[in-house]
Every structure is written in structure tokens, then in C-alpha cells.
Amino acid sequence: MLVQLYFCFCYFLPLARHRDPDAEAVWPVSVVVAAHNEQANLMELLPMLLDQEYPEFEIILVNDRSEDDTEFYVYELERQFQNFRVVTVKKTPDYLNPKKYALALGIRAAKYEHVLLTDADCRPCSLNWIRKMQSGYKNGADVVLGYSPYAQVKGFLNHLVRYETLLTGIQYLSHANKGNAYMGVGRNLSYTKECFFKNKGFASHIKTIGGDDDLFVRDAANNSDISIVIDKEGQTVSIPKKTFREWIIQKRRHMSVGGRYNASDRRRIGIFVASNILFYIISIVVLVLSSHLAILGALVGVRYLSVFPVYVLVARRLDDTISLLLLPLLDVVYFLNYMFLGISVILYKKFRWK
Image 1 (cartoon, rainbow, N blue to C red):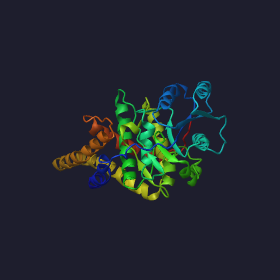
Image 2: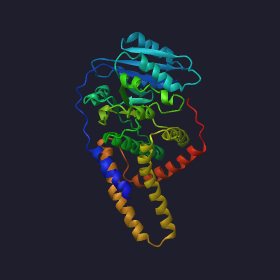
Image 3: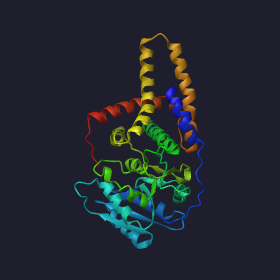
Image 4: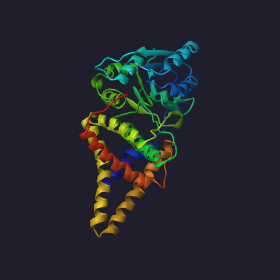
């Protein structure tokens, strides 16, 4: 409990007080989106990107081996809009990760120094998304980390997915805010081409499934300045997985990359996660085997009244929703599920990228 209180008050609470720079940046921006069989999503996303209120930007759509009608749709857009360009990938070299290869081609094709990334199943939360994310460069940063929650729909799984996303966001944003950046999310991430090439792009993890966002930030954190943007206008919202199986597969892929984080980052993140898991395991054991239920109840009460209000404050700062009634249950399920996922990643290391 003391470990959790340390992280809450030293890392998470300052995030609730963070203020983004004023949105005055107006340098040209290249928005890069890699898409594989995403025509339906692109028909919603691309018009929203083209309508962005920003003085000078281009959109680069990397059509990554699509077998649907993406090609016809994006080439029609390219004909209509001068600031829209298509990069086509017919085949990925056998030794390269497909998504990283597609993104690298898109970034290389970008004509502007500042690159802004998102995914086909994301939607910018405002017409000022580009402007807000670029404000993160105001103080000389090389990388800007954004936040990307999942859309709210009915069902307990959606509550769990959004709670997991909130806790993940709280951790990586608060650590970056304290100068200890270790990851970002490709759904809302920006960096300069100079930074990308200085860190040799995705070369250090080109064969790893996943990691085009967090492992790149890991590399960039060693020699680059990293800032965060958390205002709602600078966020993208993503379409959540609809079944528990799909979400588990997604989370196993994400967690498989965690083993490649720097040792200091793994230790710091691991201490926080382990403290939560052990808190619940020990609480369950004490509940079953001990008669000291009053002491257990007091400790659980102190923990809930100290930790949860911080989570709520940060969620409000991020303009994200969180169910107060389900919060205790979501917390238990999330951390115990995290433990089982971690075990499954260790036992089964075969993953597949679409």
C-alpha cells in the first residue's frame, strides 16, 4: 500500500495538475496513417483529418497490402486533395515487421519535419487535434506523447478496457512528465524526422511484433526531449475490442514487448504493478485464513480512500470517464488479469500480426 501511495502522490497526482503549452505552434506537419484492409475505418477517419483546422499539413496514407477496396477509395481522395498522398506496399520483406515497414515508408515519404501518427481505427477528438499535439514542441521537444482512450459502449468488458487504458495512460504520461518516458501509443504520437532517423527508426526492434510506438519511445528517451499533451482537443478516441478473446490477444501482444523495456523502466513499472497484485493476493489470503478482518478492512479502506481519488482526479484532467461504482471491482479484475496475462506471455511466446 505504501508503494502505491508513493506512485500516486509523486507521479500520478502531478499529472492531474499538468497544463499543456498554449497551442501557438504552426509549423508544417505530416500526418501518417498505415492501414491494412481498413476501408470502412478510413472512410470515417480521413475526412476528419482533411477537415483539421491547421495552416499547413499533409496526410500520408500507407496502403499496406490491402485486399479490400482501400486502393480505389484513397486514390480518389489523392485526386481530389493536394495535401493527401498515398504510399502503397505490395509486399513486405520476409525479415521485417509489416506495420513498422509501412510506417517507415510513410515517414520517409513525409515532406515535413514534424510527423504525427495515428491508426485507421482512431478518430481525432477535435478539429484542432493537429494544433494541440504540435503545441508539445513549443519548449523544444523532439517527441510528443498523446493520450488515446477507447470509445464508451455498453458492457463490462468496455469498462475494463477503458479502465486498463486509463491506468496505462496515467503511468506512461506521468512518468514522461517526470522525465522518465518509457513508452507512448501509436494511436496518438508525434516526433520529428530528425529524431526518427537519429534513433535509426525501428531498426533495434524491426523483427519484434509490436513496439512501433513504445520501443521507439524507449530508444528516443535516451537522447531526446519528450513532452506530453493531454487536453481533450489533442486526443484521439479508438474503437475498442468487442470480445474478451480479441482484447486478451491484443494485451498479450502488448505485454510481450514489455520485456524489451530498459531495466530501470521495467523495475519501476514492475514495482507498481507487483504492489497492486500482491495487495490483492495477500488480502484474499488474509480474508480466507485470518481472523484479523478489522485490520484488513481498515487497510483496504485507507488504500481505496487514498488511491482511487487520485485516479479520479487524473481521469477528470484527461476528460475521461470512470465508473465510481465499478471502480473497486475493475481494479481487482484488472490487476489479477494482468498477473494471468503475464504468466501466459511467459509460457506462450508465439504471436501473430495481421
